[in-house]
Image 1 (spheres, rainbow, N blue to C red):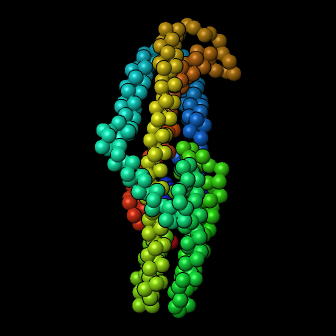
Image 2: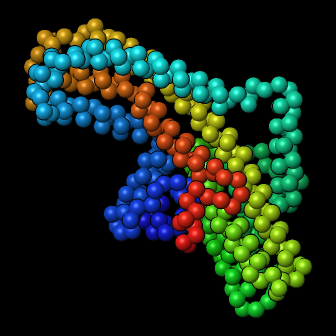
Image 3: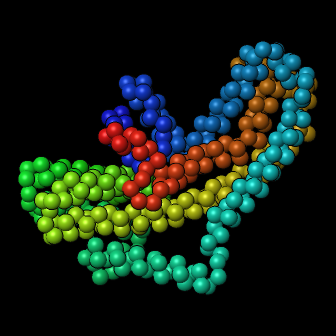
Length: 349
């Protein structure tokens, strides 16, 4: 996302607080979007872990007390690590419980499974009417790509179905031009994206469907006296097609969130046990007299304590990394229909 994009809100970026205009504000917004959405989650884990390690080193070296007092007086690092061990166990248990709650629809009785299947098949049948295909694609990424392409074709042909004065034709052409530009960008992003990865979800979320539905409804209302039945029906069909895409996108976004919770739970299990073991071993090894000497002007025992604390906190860092993205994606589509979390910005535009 470039700095210029800050003036073009989409449903996925509306939930990120818009900074003041200017180079600094745009840079802050770009960083917040990168951190919350675009960055690889393991990269964020690494950066937060490195920041924790360096901050502990800095506090121990340049803090208000000497490294000697930091490591040997007050609450000892060994005692602090024991408390961290207890907290890690609690966090892992709570997160896995939440994960089971998120996945609970998968464990329903046969009647629930049948209902879910019928809803999914009905969505496919409606989509095939829009796609002009006998059978819609099996791949979720290809399915979304084909839906966006079909919407583009319908939007670009919409001005040909509308007669009327210059203002009406101009508004419809503007809608078609804006929709084609956004949808073309989505198609480009979906070309190499694999569903299950965030890139595919981010691509389809960047299509501002709420704004487009509102734009068409405004055209219908403002020019209601000029529109004949065929023109009015063409606008309604376009709105219905966008609403169908919103439904399909919401369903697949929910599937992505469940997939991401599974990945998050698996990552937490991978990190939780080593963190607990290292914290346990560190409490047994550490003593104010061990690791004498310095390295790079920092006491060796401070290196050891900083490393042990950082590894013990990795489950929290992983939690922060994954939940920050999941919360942002979820908030972006809390509303069903032409509502967005950052509606004030949309109203200004």
